[in-house]
Amino acid sequence: KQMNGDGEPIKDEPGVIQSFKALRTTGEFKAHYSKQASGNEKVGLSDFVRAVAGMKSSEGAIQALGRGQDTAGGYAVPHTVMPEILSAMTPASSLMQAGAGVVPLDHGVKSVTSAVVNAIPQAAWRTESGSLAMSEPTFRGVTAVPQSLAFMFKVSRELLADAPNMEAALRIAIGQAFAKELDRVGLRGSGTAPEPRGLLNTTGVQVVNYGGANGGSLINYAPILQGMGAVMNADGPLPNAVIGAPRSVISLAGLVDTTGQPIRKPQLLESLPILHTSQIPVDLEVGTGKDCSELYVGDFRGMYFLMRENVSIQLLREAFASTGEIGFACHVRADVVIPYPQTFAVAECSRSRASGNTF
Image 1 (cartoon, rainbow, N blue to C red):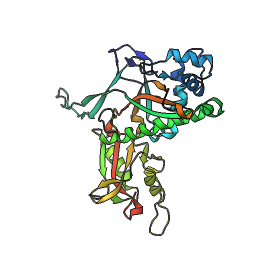
Image 2 (image 1 turned 135 degrees about the vertical axis):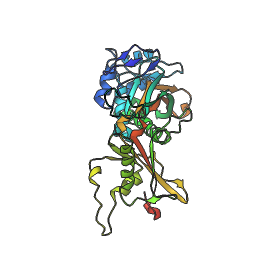
Image 3 (image 1 turned 120 degrees about the vertical axis):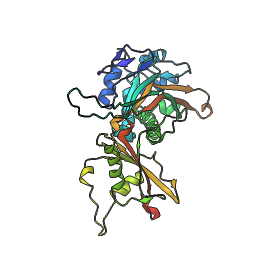
Image 4 (image 1 turned 90 degrees about the vertical axis):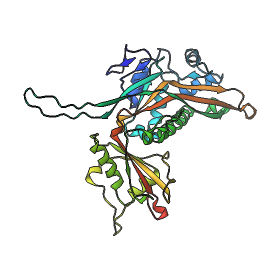
C-alpha cells in the first residue's frame, strides 16, 4: 500500500508502503488512532491489563480482548491506548524529542520500501541545440521489516487492583522501556538480525573523527561544527539537533576558557538543542583511549520508526504465581528507516575529561 499526504492508504503494490506521513506529536498520535477506534473502545491501560490478567475490569476492556488477540496469545492494546503509550515514549527518547517520527503500518502490511538518494545529479548550462549534460542521480531501495522487541514485567495482584495511579505508572514503564531501546538501535543498531540498523552503521552517514588515533579532549564545540560541516558539504539541510551521552552533554555545558569563564556557543549553534541519551556508550576503545564516546548531528526529522501493529500484552500465567504477583510480556514490532543518510553525521572519538583527556 501507499499513503497520501494525509496518511491514508492508496492502493499500490500489495504488502508494501512506499510513501507515508510520520507521526510526531500527541495530537497526531490521537488523530491517527482515533480513526481506527470503535465507538465503545474507551478503555484505559490499567483496566485493559487487569482484563488480560483475568481480574475484574470493565465490559469494554473484556470486549477489547476479543478484538485484539494474536497468534502468540497476547492482546493488542486498544487504539485509544496507543497514543498514550507513544506520548509516554517521546520525552524518554532523544530521537523522538529531536523529531524522529513513528509510522504505524496498516494491518497486514509487512514491510516498507524507501528510495534512498546516494548522489545528487549535476545540472549544467547548455547552448541552444546543445547536448544535455550526462549526470544521473543514484538511487537504492531500502526495505524495512519490523522486528520484534519485547520485555517482561511483574506487578502484585493487590497493586494492580487497587493503586489509583496504576494507569500512569504502566504508561511510563511501557513507554520508557521501549523508548530507551529504540534510541539505542536508532543510533547504534548493528543491522544484524533481529536488530535494526542505526545511524552509526548506515551507508552514507557522514563520519568525522575528532582527536586523532587515540581520541581527543572535548575542549570546544569543534566536533559539532565538524559534523555540521560534513552534512552541509553533502548538501544536507542544517542539522536541527545534537545527541550525545549525558557525560558529553555535561562536558559541553561546562566548557570554560583559560580564565574560567563559560565558553559561549558559536552563533551557528545558539538555537541548536543538545540532547542526551544513556544509550550512547562512554567506554569505547580508540587506539590507547578507552573512554571515548560519540556525538550524533543531523536533521532527525529525516528518520522514523516503522511500527507494525499495536503494542501487545501477554499474560505469563505461571511465572510468578508462588509470590502472588502477575507477570506480563510486552511486545512491539519496529524497524528504523533513514531515507536520506547524508543528512546525518557521527563525530567519533571524544574522550572523558575525568580521565584527563575529554567527553
